[in-house]
Length: 272
Image (cartoon, rainbow, N blue to C red; front, side, top):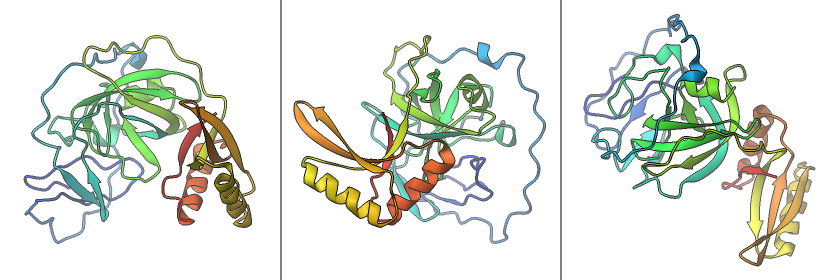
């Protein structure tokens, strides 16, 4: 569905309907509901997707399209970041493919499922990020030129080729680290070590008593695998409350939803 003079993006694979209401947009969507979703066209993959080179980050002007101060999807407001400097996040990646091949991206380009690109909710368009699969250590560099995915537990939507190179096509999702890159920074060649265990972090405290108190509250709620991990940050003790380890994305989604339902809005993926 497309809105005149508005930001638009293909719907994420995991969604069946996306109505995008962008701030400042004056054109309403058609009154009639969309028809039944058609099966995606058959698109033949390239002979060797792994041979497609990662892009090298370069300085590009901020896209005139796709960078409103904020926009809304499903009643939730997203604020576009002024720049990508210092951005680092861990979470779950998904990918989108044949059903959206050649469709318009949020910055007005055509989506190419065989290019090394991605969609992100709030990074400025375009931006370059390094995405590392935390299970197998594989890394890719992608150019962010689209918006999404609009599922709370997903932090980035990758192109088909990027997903192939991260070995996440079969599962459809993967635990990843996403790190912003600066212009001229070369793509990753060697794969870093994979994280042995993953957790959901419920909170972090400067005092152990507060951390222990939260663990007790979680255990009362039936979350038995909560524990306190002590770290040193700039020489100061930090007590992290974590739940896990988390074996897969399905269990991560459930654990994250449970913690957020208890008011722990900042719960997130954490590595060992």
